[in-house]
Amino acid sequence: MLDRKLLLVTGKGGVGKSAVTAGLALQAVRRGKRVLAIGMIDGGGLASHFGVDKLGYQPAEVRPGLFAMAIDRGAAIDEYMKLQVPVPSSIPTKTLSNVFGAVVDTIPGVREVVTIGKPIYEVWAERWDLVIVDGAPLGQVMSYINAPNTIEQLVPSGRIREQARRIAETLTMNSSGMVMVAIPEELPVVETLETLAELEIEQPIQVSAVVANRLLDELEVDLDGVPPGAHLDAATHHRGVWASQQHWLEVLPADSLALEFLFGMHTPSEVAARLADAFEDLP
Image (cartoon, one colour):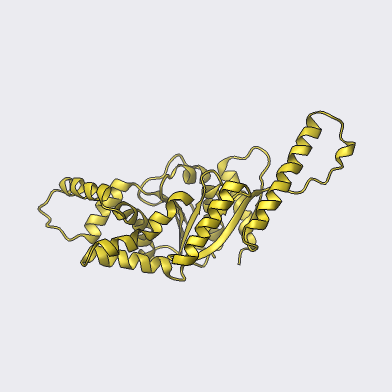
């Protein structure tokens, strides 16, 4: 999985996709790779797991060999115009930004293709061994992945259409993959399975892995020997949650990667380091 050039991490909100993104990025760096981690929608979660206050639009080194950034839509629009849209130099940049900003907000797929286009542009630049993206949540991610095809259908010809085609091709290549994060509960599992089914039909990107996060170990305690009170209540609750998790784990793909629940007071950067340890055995 870490030998790919592009990894897009997604999952229902609150399942720990930013932590998993950071853990995978750190593990890749430990293997000697030069890595760029990107917060596609909100860089706050990724920043906290790397132990920095915030991420800017320009890649900054947060660890030796590990760079991170967050996508700013306004900056992405400006960059997209300069790189992809041939316009006379006499036209003020602010005027172009305002005009193209209106296009982004009104034409289906343009906002999404500009956003997903930034990580793919970084792949094309070949400055990184791995570009890993803390992507949109499950309810939104397909609109970003399918945006290049939407643009191809709307735009009959020209450079914008050609760039959309290249983005779509890059997503479907063997060097690109999606990592889906879920916790073993009903809503995250159901949404994950629905997205997997959609991906299987349309195949806009390969699924590299499904990650089952925050798994409890079975509590090997004889409850008959626990006196009534807080300890018994906690043990009973633990067993109930564990049993529920086992049910939903059986519904997820059998080859899902399992990550244990990290008990105790851990900072986000400590969580990322622990998850990087857990990814040590990844092929």
